[in-house]
Amino acid sequence: MTAHLEPEQGIAAGVPFLAVPPISTPTPESPVVVAWHLMDPPRTEAAFAAAIPLEGLDAWRIYLGLPMCGSRLPEGGQDELMRLAFEDAVMNVQGPIAQQGALEFPAAFRVLQERFGFGAGSLALAGGSMGSAVAQLVLAQTGPVAGITAKAGVLISPVAQLRPVVDAVGRRYDMTYPWGPASLEVAQGLDFVARAGETVAAGQPALRIIVGAADDAEGFLVPCERLLVALRAGYDDPAQVELVVVPGMAHALAEEPGIEPAPQTPNAAVVDRYATDWLRTHLLD
Image 1 (cartoon, rainbow, N blue to C red):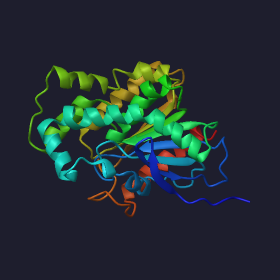
Image 2: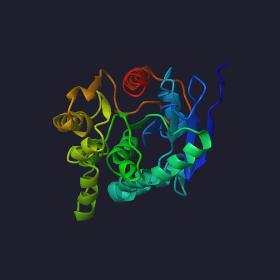
Image 3: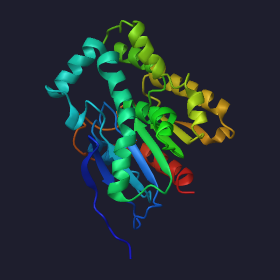
Image 4: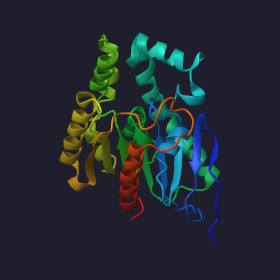
């Protein structure tokens, strides 16, 4: 008889999480998907779970909160986060969030393994926008160092290269970011086209990249195309990496303010289907 467990929220090694159990009775061999949200809507783990529930996927779905977001916003809340971003987006916000999110993952994952009893099954990683930067750092860097290897992944509206993303945000707010040696070093660390070889060396996880046709082309679509080429060049089977462009979709996957769970938008439903189908094929096989 199948046990119908309820989703559970909590803190794992300082990281907020929402854990949604598998459809079938959980076992140590149950597969696991770990996902990080966007900084645009949906901008919390609960809101991301509502937008991208991976409906029908028989796996643990663990949604993690990003540093400096949701319950970990700096004092002053979203306004203070925006102030820090306008002061220096790369050094104050984007770099620290991506780096800390990747560094804190292994300890949080170990706590979640103990708490929910999984760990013998396959792992996939997913992320939207800045959450995708964390997922890619974990895939290429902090996961392998900790002995945690992902079999598959889904990158949604991803940061493929930070510098074009920062320039895109600058166009959005009619400002030019003043690149310097320190911020260029951060951008280099978040250039996943240049770091594609590390993802290849980490086991060639099956990756689906999903981006909106109405997103900023130079900031997101073109870098995603570069990432596809760079990864496929190193994979034994290039079909293990795929780019999907969703017509009419911009960057966000939910309506503002994107903090609480909200009804799924049509574009998010499309992304959810693409993500679920990919993971059903490459995680559950």
